[in-house]
Structure formats: structure tokens, C-alpha cells
Length: 187
Image 1 (cartoon, rainbow, N blue to C red):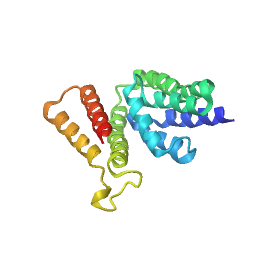
Image 2 (cartoon, one colour):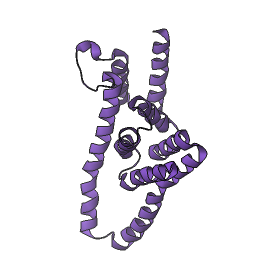
Image 3 (cartoon, rainbow, N blue to C red):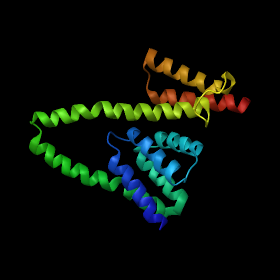
């Protein structure tokens, strides 16, 4: 029964994750944290961090990890297949349709209309992770002491470096991880 739940949950995530891995984060959070309580919000944030750092799409990495945690190797297989199956079918159908109808203006209009939605989904996921890191589980400021200063400073420094010098984001992620690890080890 748990294998079917894993498959169905990640099938839904794979089916409605329009826009790529980052757009799937709100869907992942809803299924994994809110509906099934397979992970806490803190564990989910760690999952997204690890899934972003490992090779491959975040939703597939997350499916494999959650499936493994919940039901071992069979769970990882069911969750991962559930996550990729909708994409395989949809992409095959869309590739055929796009190749056949790519010159129509309505097709170009639909693609233009989807872009702002994807940006909003990614922004929502980013704000959720930022809120958890800086403000904690509650997600809102009760008083000024409720703000975690180290994550806020790391975020500000990383954002500044990314905007000012535009380095490879991998280096900024690694640098932030090293600085954060050192700071938390010293505290």
C-alpha cells in the first residue's frame, strides 16, 4: 500500500511540475510534508538542499530519497518511476504536437503565457526556503530576536556576490556551505 502511495504522490508531482525541478518544490512540499507527513519542514529543507547539490533534477532526486526513506529500495524505485512517467508520456506527445503545429501563433501565445506562472512558482519556493532559514519554523517575525542572523548574513552576502560579480553559482553555494559550516562549528 505504501508503494502505491509513493507512486501516486510522485506521479502527481511529475504530472503537474510544469517548468522544471524548481517549480516542483511547492508540490513536493505539499505531498511530502503537508499531506503525508513523511518529512518535517526542516527535513524537507535539507532534502531540497541535498537534491539541488546532487546531479539530476530536484524532483527525481527528492523522489528517490523519500522513497528510500519510507520503503527502502522498492520505495525509491516506485517513487522515481512515478515521478518520471508523466514526463516521458507528456514530452513524447508534446514533441509530436509541437513538431506538427509549431508555426501556429496560438502555440506561441500559450508558451508566452506559461512563463510568468513558472517564475511565480519558483519565487514561492525560494521565499519558503528563505523564510524557514531566516525566520524559523513559524515563518514570521515575532520580534527582532526571532531572526537568525547567520543565515540572513549568508543570504545577503551570496546575493551580493551573485549580483555584483556574477560568478558560477556552484562556487557561491560551496562557499556559503563552507562558511556556514565553519561558523556553526565555532558557535
